[in-house]
Length: 129
Image: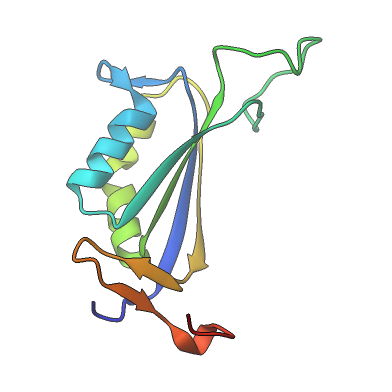
């Protein structure tokens, strides 16, 4: 495995109820990320959340709801993530709820690819297994 360029983690916060062309928005993003060759992606479902588009919090603050926050977390080279988000940027105009996209520097410490080879950056670890 080649040593990657600058690695980053992108998080996209959306509503579980948003749709995009007949599919759930977060599923459409995940499928497009896979088709675009994004290195890794995980979708998390939150119990509760609010953002700048929230109007108020009512008495049912902690009661389960069908509308929950979804966090789509991706890891790849920063340049690849930025190309991806710029390609799907128009999709966000079609959402009814608010959203947030963040990107932060990251690095791979341990990684195992499909070949079964585990890559380890020993300079970052206090021990080597």
